[in-house]
Amino acid sequence: MTSLGQQLSQIATSGSQKDKPTLYKQVLIQIFEGSSKTSNDIVIETREFLSHTIQESVGLVVSRQLLNDFISVFEVWAKTINDSDIIQGVWNYLLERTQSRVSAFEEQISIVREKLATSYEEDECWSDAARVLQGIPMDSGHRVVSDDYKLKIYIHIVRLLLEDEDATMAESFLSRASLLIHNCKELVIQLQYKFAQGRVLDFKRQFLQAASKYHELSYVTEMHEDERINCLVNAITCAVLASAGPQRSRMLATLYKDERVRERPEMSGVYSILEKVYLERVLKKSEVEEFAKTLKSHQLAKLGDGTTVLDRAVIEHNLLSASKIYNNITFMELGSLLAIPSEQAEKIAARMAGEGRMTGTVDQIDRLIHFKTSHILPNWDNQITSICHHVDSIMESIQKKYPDWIIANAL
Image 1 (cartoon, helix red, strand yellow):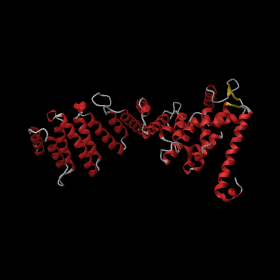
Image 2 (cartoon, helix red, strand yellow; image 1 turned 30 degrees about the horizontal axis):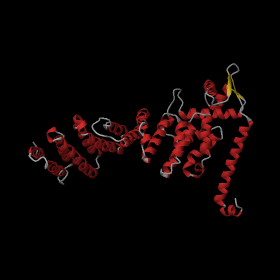
Image 3 (tube, helix red, strand yellow; image 1 turned 135 degrees about the horizontal axis):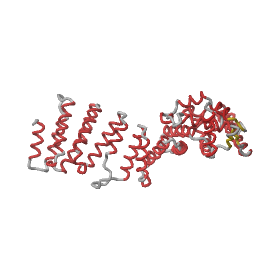
Image 4 (tube, helix red, strand yellow; image 1 turned 60 degrees about the horizontal axis):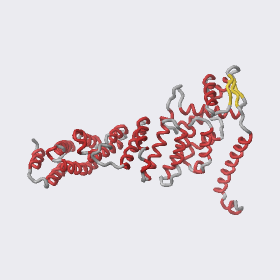
């Protein structure tokens, strides 16, 4: 038996139960003292101390107190070594040793799991961090766990899973959070939940709903300005990637009319494509390639037909733009315009017409697509709206360059 083991045995067999916590803590502090000890020496003694601490012979009350003391002392020492492998190894050992008595040490296990998850998160081991947090006992019945604490953990798990691009599992934990969010009064948690909602919708390619959620968050004054602008950029990106149709057009109009889109320098990467998409202009290949550089990996994922999410969005947009220019067009000419096979162009046009996202009919005998023109007045209104936006933009530029002239003319 080592000298540490002898000390621990002597304390365990001593008569005074009241003095044991103090004596154990003195031994605990001694483990982390001494300049001659290496980190490995301390880890070995730490494991011996933990193995002794959780024994039933020590007593549950004393064991819980010792684990709390250990967590505090070890955390201070861990900051001095800055070695994640050692830190994670000790936390994992503690969880392993308490596995057989989870119900007895639920509070301590929860604390350790949070600290271990933080260490994994710092190393960008997202899935490991999420797995550790999933092991926190929430509904065992041996302790009262508040809804706010559950909600905080669930949302943290969602964020970690999304970093690892596991949207399926993230949605599962977001569903658990949705059962608790209505009772939450803490604004930070509410905002984290809404942002997690937006990201899950984004990953699930429900881009229109994601754009709406991001745009809503971009107006929350309690968020940092950089975060609000980031939400606005995400909203524009998702709106561009959404399936072409009336709902997307309304979202694009809302974003295009947002003054921040033209004023903020951070918008320069997405404003040009937003403008062209909103004004229903055909997108060029170079413009699409430039926009693709700003996208995340899941937004460039391949679909079942071999195209990407961006490819589908651009094809549908250009098809809708073509419907504003042509009265009718052959399958071959449409395929050439969209840079896809004529058969694929026919299928896409038929699907969009069937879903009510494009007004037109498909004539398979003559291999023609006939576009139905909308009423003249709405088109006229849209053109007037576009001119007004351009005039407004010109006035803003004049105001910035010649403010005195603006004041003098009472404009």
